[in-house]
Length: 105
Image 1: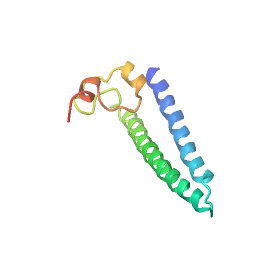
Image 2: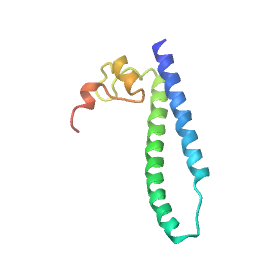
Image 3: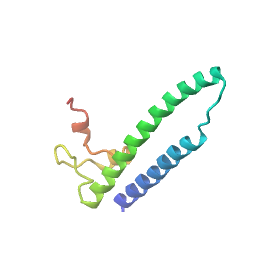
Image 4: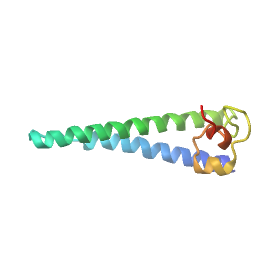
């Protein structure tokens, strides 16, 4: 049952991120005023950064969902040991156990 709850959590978060990305695209308006254009360029940079972060998180969620389908979700992708439900509850799209996550690359 715990995995189903985690899957639901991932799917809900994925929907929220997709809505956020869609809303960002629809809400951004251009202005002819040069002072406003400068502010918009700054906003565009921030928005672009947020979109990259959201896109990366969506990618990680998709990987987690694929790992669920293949029965690999509960195991660390690096060492193969159990990730632990407490960690998965905190970061449901993680692929690493706490030990591997804390090991410098």
